[in-house]
Amino acid sequence: MPTEQPKDRRRDVPRTDAVLADPRLAAAVPTLGRATVKAVVAAAQDRARRGEIAPEQVADAAAGALPRRATSLRPVLNATGVVLHTNLGRAALSDAAVAAVAAVAGHTDVEFDLDTGNRARRGRGTLAALAAAVPAAEAVHVVNNGAAALLLVATALAAGREIVVSRGELIEIGDGFRLPELLAATGARLREVGTTNRTAAADYAAAIGPDTAFLLKIHPSNFVVRGFTSAAGTAELTGLGPPVVVDIGSGLLAPQPLLPDEPDAATALGDGAALVTASGDKLLGGPQAGLLLGRADLVERLRRHPIARALRVDKLTLAALEATLRGPETPTWQALHGEPAELRGRARALAARLRERGIDAELVESASVVGGGGAPGVELPSWAVAVDPALAGPLRTGEPPVVGRVERGRLLLDLRCVPRDRDEALRDAVAAAAGQGE
Image (cartoon, rainbow, N blue to C red; front, side, top):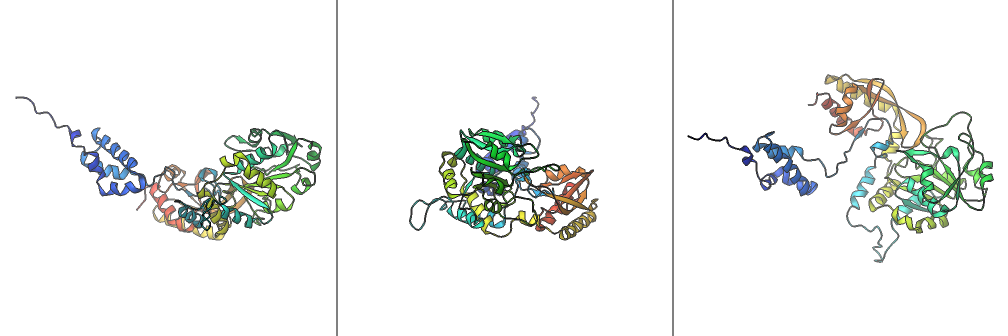
């Protein structure tokens, strides 16, 4: 009598359409897309065919493996104490900016006049808001980041000509990108003057010739040179003849008492700068953008240059930037001005709640920094909760991800950049990482 063969359970793996009919998976299709959900189902079916899960567990496994959102980018709790952390996206948008982005996600009047039915100036409301924020600027323009702003200036005004710049200001801006190489790529020639630590107005004056397009001042925004140093100010250069272009970098539009040494657009223009370039996603607290402010004739030349089209910003950036300029205090502003006493109270409460769950947590003094190429050397007194550094990895891969900093054998969770309403989420994340979640 023939031996009965064991049943091949792979035949019991449910069909794709049957699994997709599960309410949990069907509900995910509108937000994640059918292709994404179907791929998750296929992966669960493959697990069942390999015998890793039972066929009847396919739907549960697929539902558990669904991504939370359609993007692979994940929102992070920034507990590093770095207000403008480049690797974490720099400035966090305000609620007003987030709402503005959502409002214009569909069709919008970005280049259309609803009153006349004719084409209109792209982003005119955003440009008006920027002009109102910096009255000293005759005209303004916006491109897609700070480096693009300087690229456009050099290309439009100095291709085939010379840019006079101090040796001490030829900086590297991160990830190996160097401003001298960026400027040289435009076809401009750099005329370096002065020395690494000292450059005088006379050095610029001696270098000016018939091929000089403009004098360039670059704020060394991610380092500080101390000691026997000096640099020519904008006001000293404006009487030498050629236009003066000032790259302030961090996007501070007006003087900020908290950061007295940080250059700002209004002061540079008041000192006679022909053009000022800056970033939108740093101290301004808005989306990534490059800001151009200054003389109307020069801004118009930049706006009409062919590469300006390649550097233009989209409707989402325009909406977020306008809301940042017109709206309430940004998260960046709030983080910069966080009171140490309040931070101490929040950190003390967080440490106490963690100890209640059996987690070793200590209240410690901390020093936050501005980051993002702004206010180098400035430290902001803060408070943090110190926990076991072994929790750093589980916190980064948890939900929500939490990024702190390891210092002197401890993982510090600095609360300066954590919104107050996320304190409980931070507590629960630490508890989960320590295996003490509820």
